[in-house]
Picture 1: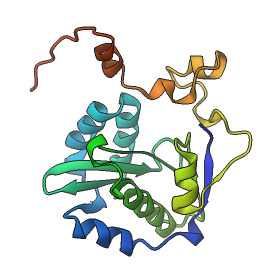
Picture 2 (picture 1 turned 30 degrees about the vertical axis):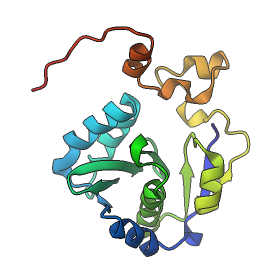
Picture 3 (picture 1 turned 135 degrees about the horizontal axis):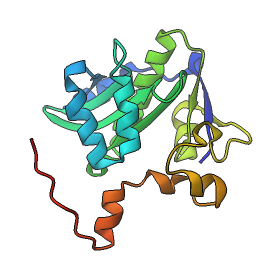
Length: 192
């Protein structure tokens, strides 16, 4: 997965995305610090510990650099910026059951507008998953020579990607999901 570049001075308008979600009963907004634990646990459960760690960084700034989408008290998706590196968008994710409804696009465009308002002219989408999606949504372009994203070289768990030719996305999968799919019984962790 390569890195991609977005011109923040040529973004699609934000309000139509927010209004469309609002009409579906979905709120897209910046996270508040008291939501940190709920949001990072949800990210860890639905995606992976790397992404929840990055979101943790987004909660350490004021205002936070973590956006969320929710329907009443149900968290549907999240997006971050300035978490792994300054000027980077991501990570981002939407609950599998809610995909295809424009939630991810609203979160993406919300983050990019926040970055523009903070003074950035360009954004890097690090280790971008579906490049065709980002090309269509925000006219992102692949940065030549960025596959795999060397911004993440040396990150624990990525040795196979950088040294053995493993697929770029292989390290992102939640280890608990992999073990469950393989039939490994996971120990139950009591909830506090």
